[in-house]
Image (cartoon, rainbow, N blue to C red):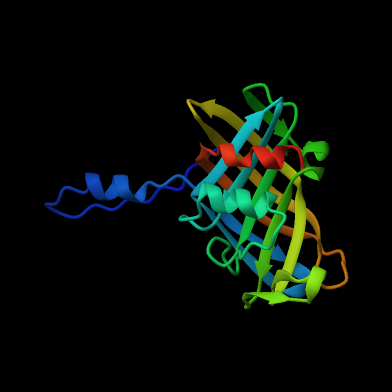
Length: 210
């Protein structure tokens, strides 16, 4: 369960130490599949943000390594339209976790209350995030297959690490539905495992009360 993705290579007569250190990037990685639809989404999370206050923590694990605290906070809390193209990745699945009660650390397995307050969002297939609808119904939507769900079988461990947080996660069985296509229920499977340190993001305070 608790592993990091490591790669190593060594060349004759060369100092490979620095190359190996650069390759040893902590990540939460794997794939998720909707078997009935033959759709696959990648997970390669090396970036994320979190904030905790009042006994509640929110964590966003992003596939885009360049996604910023401000972008993610605006996406989760803004009352106006936010263009997700700069920070959401097509063909990938991001993870949002809401932890309560938060007392500085947590280690849980298959907790369905936590899962019900969390979500996994997958932009399956080929597509783009485009403006759709009109007036009050205007929104950005994925033109491929958008799936939203939660883990059914998982292990989660979070520890405070100074001002940041160490997140270790293993998931392999999921419930969910196609939210933009009539809400049909489609479970997913796939091993997603690893560890990553996420940065504290005070801008996420607005997501805690939502």
